[in-house]
Length: 152
Image (cartoon, rainbow, N blue to C red):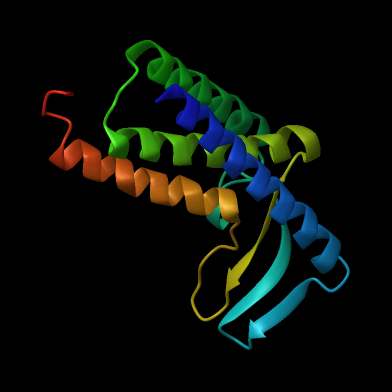
């Protein structure tokens, strides 16, 4: 399961970084591009913090915590070599997304966000955030329904 794990992280990171590259190139000059007026826009945001701008003055803390979590999760996966597909998928998604955002924080000092649901008060987000969220949901499903069962 380690090859799909590391391949998944790499593919998620490449997808995220490519999308951010294109979003920055397309949106930096126009700032926002409505796909569905007042519902969903592509909006260029340089986010030094987390969702809703929390910790925006503590980019270094987000960087360190993200790095430590990535190292801990990768270490767990390499040492324990879990075989449950839900667990592996959830952790792969979360780490892939975390690596994508970590690259931005280290390289730029902020994370590039561009998905903007203007219909509701929701923070602008990116592909890495999507993978982190979906990975966390998969991980919670694993913990609630499968973690007490013996791995085969």
